[in-house]
Length: 354
Ligand code: AQP
Image (cartoon, rainbow, N blue to C red; front, top):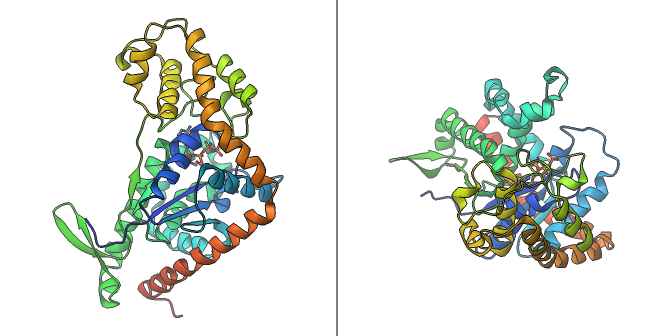
């Protein structure tokens, strides 16, 4: 329990085609949450230059992610949709958080290790500091809840660590300025400026795996297009990719326990369950004992049924960049007003002269 008004924030990088993992792990949850919460959804373009600096067409990637948000059903009038670089508070707060966070915290991040690979010395400083910018994205709006896929869990823990350290290090200043809000920490109640954000990670598809390798996350940057279902794929492409998806020779088990040690089977059953809004147990009680040659066409039909309306709407929106740009401009102005207030408070707390 805390006295912070509930607010949802989440972001998606404009680094390529959105895929089924982004949809089931994140965007579908964004849509569901907007019915009951105040939501801010961001195309995190500043993050997109951390792993690769020069992008061929960043502007159209930003528009395409925005089109996916809108096509999936996010309402940009009732909520806020914008691209991160429009609001300078993200970079400003990230700098302050770079001074709050410790290098050791960043060095432990799995995503940094995976993305930097063996040649860490040659990774950008931005890639190392990525989680600090992510904490700034969330805390600039003092967001209390963040819907994400399972891969972002560690970054959200770090966001909590940054908020806790900032609240502790500046506790007297926060109290003096009357800027504290009550936060429950275990049995105790403390006064802090930033909320201790809760991750929202749940359902049957928190980590959708590559269709070609059940040990690898489905990812925009995987060089093989057959590894993922893109939100822009048509019915034929979806069916072909599912048909070619890696599986094992055994029939489907009748219970989830039988998926242990069968990552590709587990992944396809999880995708089916998430698309059908059922549990894996429900899916297996229907398909247990059936071969993949029977299961895959039913999965393909379900994926086409769920994704083709989004696909059609995305194409329509991408053909109207003026509308997308107007949505981002309006969202940026509304996000900017909230961010400005936070940055004024933070500058007062840190002790800068304004
Ligand atoms: N495979 C996945 N399963 C479930 N959720 C996923 N997400 C990403 N991949 C999966 C969730 O989608 C949201 C947006 O992710 P992102 O674009 O900001 O960055 P990412 O996690 O790095 O995604 P990618 O596709 O793997 O991109 P690249 O290849 O550019 O690194 C997040 O909530 C994420 O959890």
